[in-house]
Image (cartoon, rainbow, N blue to C red; front, side, top):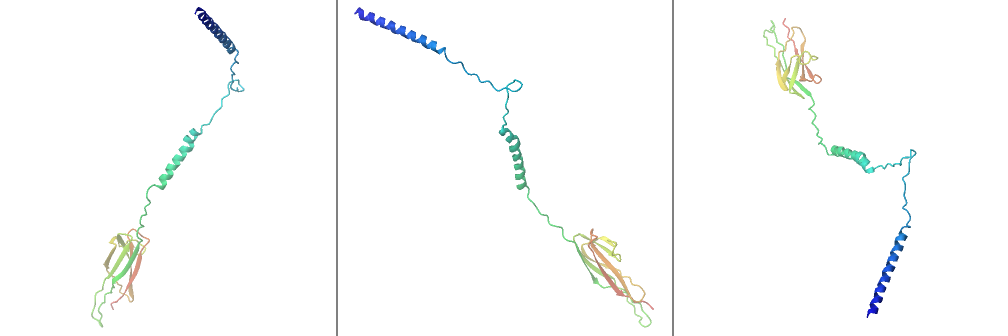
Length: 199
């Protein structure tokens, strides 16, 4: 019984020894590994490491292109979707209508052959203007705007004395009407009556 135990102890000792010898060989082999390779950066002419610049398109696009398109897009959408266009109605065109409502008569003076006399008759004119709220009138001065007044109603009539001369023939008077404030639009009429000179 003693002999087998002795053999076991000897075998164990031999195994331990072999194991230790193998460890020494492994550590010795690891010392022969190749040194690491060092890569140096390229150098410039001055001897300093050269640097390389990288353009970032994201920054450029964001600050330049994208920003610009954002602004233009905003303005475009503002223009197309902006305020509503409204058309204002044009002011009414100015016009004048003028006529004689009652014709004048020159007075008739009595004579030995015709002793009866008759008074004269005034003239009545009527008018209507558009393009203004008032009318201007002139009597016997067609080139002088509103010589007889410029505050008459836009539509109305006016009775005026019709003075006649004491000479054979006819007496003539002119009447002009404008839309108040508009000297370029007017109408003039001429009214005549036969004189009745006294003998």
